Amino acid sequence: MRQRPHPQWAAWAFLAPVTLYLALFYAYPLYRNLDLSLRNYTVRSFVQGDAPFTGLHNYRTVFDDPTFAPALLHTVVFTAVCLVFQYAIGLALAVFFNQHFRLSATLRALFLVPWLLPLIVSASTWSWMLNSESGVVNAALHAVGIDPVNWLTSPSWSLTSVIIANIWIGVPFNLVVLYSGLQSIPAGLYEAAALDGAGAWRRFWSITFPLLRPVSAITLLLGLVYTLKVFDIIWIMTKGGPAESSTTFATWSYQLGFGNLLPAFGPGAAVGNLLVVAALVFGLVYVRVQRKQALS
Image (cartoon, one colour):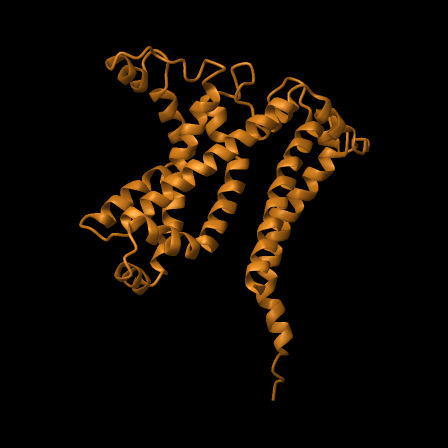
């Protein structure tokens, strides 16, 4: 009789496909990006593969660049404002749709449209809406007696414009995840609180918000990772301008590596690695917090 395979070999067989996938599409690109940031790559050396090793020179170049401080500030502001408004609006909509009224499912499906559209379509639509001369937003402002705003061509408004567009795109994701979390909260808790005389706000702050904390944590973490690497929306709407007023690390990395006649592959990869490190740090913080909550 044939000997049955050892369970450990079966476990490795099931693990092999995902391990291969992670190695090809995650580990190797990260290694190549790290290698790019530690060498002086030019177009010729990029093709021939003989770029000299320069250590942390590309990182020092990035830190000394006058664009670094504004790009860092824009990245922080863009990420923080988008996260706060996406989560707040998504939570409000999730609580609203949790009432199970007529057409609730249909309206929830309509709110998913911004999340399902290709980013190039969303960005192009917002570029048309915020156009200084023919945009529908300025037309509406003019109708109520407000002077038109140069949304995409003014250094004072360009970052605000891309933030508004990204909030609109990210709200459906928060709505879906938070709504799923609300479904797991027992209805009996709300009934008991109502019998004790707790109002709607009291029930929200004492029941909904605390029990939704684990779901909120993963929602904010995923939103943070997605927002840090947002490139399409900003590049299509403003290309990081005008005067680098909406430049973030994502757009700056692309501009360094591909947006110039003489591409700076090393510094561009270094900026990209800074984004990877930021996302990794927040991910480790999340894991640490989750472990403390599990032990407490």
